[in-house]
Each structure stands twice: as C-alpha cells, then as structure tokens.
Length: 459
Image (cartoon, rainbow, N blue to C red):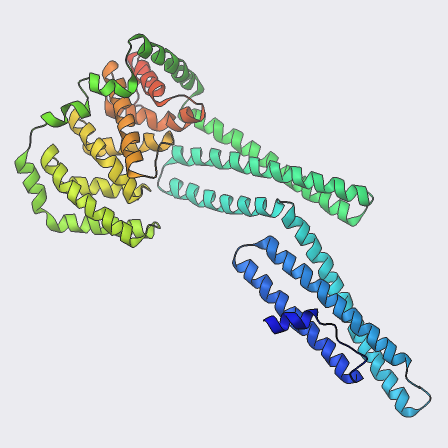
C-alpha cells in the first residue's frame, strides 16, 4: 500500500523516459490511484462513515484528473513534435490523436463523477444524509412494531405507537426541511431561480413539506382514535384528580414513597411476618423438569435479545437461587416464579432488570393478595409507561419498589384494588408521563375517579 501511495505522489519525469514508457507510466499511476481511493472508500462505507467515503472518492478523483491532464499535455506535446510530411510521421501523428481522444473521454467522465461526488459530499456534510438515514430506519422499525401490535389485537397500544411514530417523523422531517431551505438559499445566491439545480431543490422542499402535512393529518386522526379509547373528558378528570390527590397526600403529611409501609398493603413491612407455606414450596421444588425448561427458555430469549451468553448464564443461575429462596420465604412455587421471570424477559427486560424487579413484585403480590401474574403485568406496564425501566439490577429494584408502593398506597386510600389501578394505568400511564404528571398523582387520581363512579375495568 505504501508503494502505491508513493506512486500516486510521484511526478513522472517525461523528459528522461521514452514516449511509450511515459504514457504507460502515467496510465499505471492512474490505475494505482483509482485502486487506492476505491479501497479507502470501501473501508469507510463498511465502517458506516458515509461522509468519509465521499471525501475519499472526491480526493481520489481529483488526483486521477490531475494525472490524466498531465498525460494529455504530454501526448499533445509529443504529437506537436512529429513531422507529418513522412508516412511514418503521419501514422505516429494519428496514433497520438487516438490516444488524445481516448484520454479526453476519460477526463470528461472523471470530471462528471467529480461533480456528482462533490454534491454527495455537500449532502453528507450538511447533516441531511444522517437525518434521512435515521428517518428511514425509525420509520421501518415503527411500521414493523405497529403491525406486530395490531396482529396481536393490541389496538390501543398500536395506536399509541402510531402517535409516537408520527411525532418523531414530523420532528425529523421538519429538521430536514430547514436544511433543504438553507441549501436553496445558497443555490439561489449563485444561480437563477430558473436553473436546474434551483428547481430540483425546490421540488425536494415541496416533497418534504407534503410529507410533513401528511403525517400531521395522520397524527390528528390517531389522536382522535385514542380519544375514543380514553375520552378527553375523562383524561381531564384524571389531570384534575392528580392535582387534588397530591394536595391531599401533602395535607395528610404522608410521603408517597413511604406510603406502602403505612398501609395494610405494605410489602416491605410484612415480609418478615409471612408464614412459610412449606407444602406449596416443596411441591414447586419437585417440578425440576418444568423449571429447567423455563430457565432454558429464559436463557435462549435473553441471548437472542442481544445479551452476552456469559452474563446471561450468570444471571439465570442467580434467578434459580433466588427462586428457591423466595419460594420458601413467600410460599410461591418455584415454577410460578420462573414463569414470571420468563414473562419479564419476553416483555423486553434484560436478565439484570428482571432480577431487580422480581422480589418486590412477589412481595407486593403476597402483601396485597393480588394474583402474582397480575402484579407482574401491572408493574411492568407502569414501569414502561412512566419510563422507569433502569439498566442496573439495583435501579430496577428501587423503581419497582416505588411503583408497587405508590399503586398499593393509592389503592388503600381509595376504593380500588391493585388490579383495578393496573388496568386504568395501562391506558393513561404513558400519556401522564408525557404530560409530566407524577406516578403518585396519576395513581391517586385514578383512585379518586373510581370513588366517584368511574369503572376502571370498563372497556
């Protein structure tokens, strides 16, 4: 590679070599230069550096053009020295003429490539290429996710995903439009409004603006459908109820994060007082084959989800250890605990996140009397809706405890149950989070609305 690079930078001394050798030497230099920049361009592309690839190509073409111009100059100079009065001279003159014509065609082709590459380089440098790449990737991912939800019959979740996708697309396209308009001004300052470049850029702007208008229309429709699922009138009551609920909480001098410990549903307070249901625990321990199958499925799901096999193996071993301990301590079968771990992983939790959430959810189930599966489902939905999924085990433990404490506290202070609140929160949690309404306020508001006759389980 070093020799090729040196060859690219070496000016061939045409005064010290024969004509045929000089022409061949220059042609070899052009081929060598092309091989170098194409190799560098391919490396940049494979690394995902589109801007770097465009720079390599532009600089390589520039060197090729310089070498070809040198070759043309040499050929014309040599042709001018020939005596055409002789037959041999006429033949040599025509030979040079063909070489010159061929070199001119090559030069025109390279100049055309250079112009197009310069436009590509400007496109990459403007940031527009990155925006459009992100737009295409996000659009494809969102469409596949929405189709998945619709296939599963999750119409409400699918519609929420559409709203989120439309908003992201509008934001991205708006940024694209600003860059395109800035480019139009640059083109307008150097050429007329009737030039081909100006017209093409104007067309791009019109297409982007049309796409934005289309997404805004679809967003309005999706929001209308969402309002059918959960009417604005009810949502306004939730917002009002959230404010009232938080005021009541402060007046009662009860900190929501400590609320569960002050109520009959306190998972942490009654952990030490839970009786050991030995028969059930040992019954679960006997189901070794089913247990191993569940943990094997957890391992496969986690590895396919992108986790490292070594870390998954370690985490699954810890799940098995905790499952045995919690089975005896809380009177839940090891099989049901393993199934709960598997459910969390299927919901997109990493094995670390599942480990951080499980014990608190199990405690909440025992403390509140709610079905273990319901608690896992409800807690997972609320954690997701309020953006509380942490990466670490410790973070998930803390956030899960906050969720079950606040839901249980709101349930105790109103006429609702943990499951009822979970159903209602599945509809409003993500919207409340976007509106900067706290989990405590939202849960309490749902409880107050239930006190006033709103059936949270009504569809």
